[in-house]
Image (cartoon, rainbow, N blue to C red; front, side, top):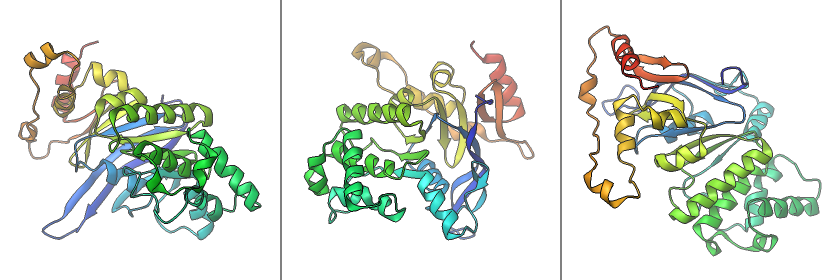
Length: 313
């Protein structure tokens, strides 16, 4: 993995709200990770852990409090001229959680999808513009007749397909999917995830897939990062995370996934995470450390040795 091209580098990223006030919120508190070209990095954690804020800060919906977001080696934050900002906005797009709230109800689907096409001047004529819209609709499993309808005429799954088509319209390289399936029925979730995987293969896309459903994240992700209260506490491949979850918080998340066996569901014990277990001594350096190659855990030097001793190969 390390030999692959780094598309995105996040370095000690911080996002604080109400900074310096009694109600200061450290939504992101110094996280570091990379995303490689062509992969899907899943970012999971409970509500309020900072995962959605991470996605929004990466794409500049929020200005970072501190740290760096490097996209192809260039810093995303800070001053940019209009031309550079336009180029950045075209290369990075976002799919939002609520497929209805993110679509303008007063605009026809054709205009919703073509917004980016119009802003970036990608069509030379109205005919070419509509042909691009029709092609995008067909790409996401809809048809050209849907172009003249309004968002309220569609189901939740169809609306999310429209949201995906809108994101694809400017031919981005990197897409942040912020809980794109959480508002959908389970049967529709699988359809949307399968569509995203298909598009990734065909178009060489790179994803940051944000979710709280670990079972679905495993299905789409190459690697998974686990967040807890603004910190990244574990990062490794999807297969490794399920086989060898090391951080107690990760273990508690995985133990909460229901099993399709009623008998085992009745008897198995779920693990709960107690943050007080991690009351580190003053001066004890706690950071992301590599337990085994490619498997990182937020821990002290003492905990690192314990993880390495108990590691199951």
